[in-house]
Image (cartoon, rainbow, N blue to C red; front, side, top):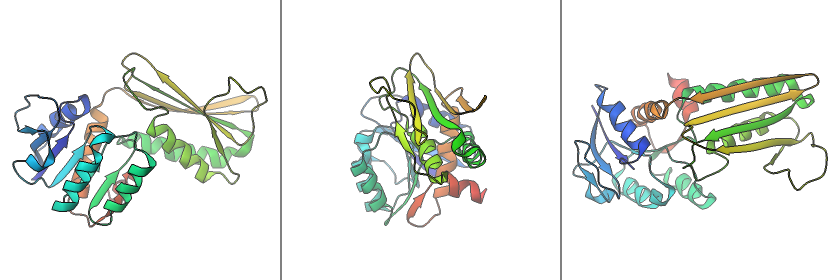
Length: 251
């Protein structure tokens, strides 16, 4: 039985992780961490040092501002850390990589297995279609999401850049540029509105035909299940950085 603590447990994703974990026999929630108050049937504290017991793994679904305190606690206690939060700065990403020298850290911009398939299919399409097809990435999220473009959209773009034999540049805004589209561009488009959980589309537009690859998340449950799977995967791993790629390859 893996004992999990959830950071950001009073938020939407944190609550969903707690609900999903309650339905499993191989995990248990030993504590939650949040600045808000909520009654979920287990202790919820405002600092990791106040955890009533040492968790086997921490899942963070809170906010980038909580990162430093979590890294300090995890490194001091040798606790694996699953980061299910986006919007980290370059400086914070450097802190994450440094901490991974001491503890196992699982980081992914998106915990959905379907998104990993979308990435693989997009890379395959890019290798077959080549520079004759222009690439546009469109992502849609709810009106409360702060960062844009989404971390998943950037993950898709980076994967396509790595796949391409010619250098690519990410283009976020065309309204003030009066020129034709460059072949090296990958267009990035963010839509925010309503309660959209998450939609990501990769559009390949070529001569007289278009190909669209899309992933739609109907609820946060897919991310919660992925985070729990990551916690189980990470629980017996040595220090290092891990992602969905390693987890899927072991499945």
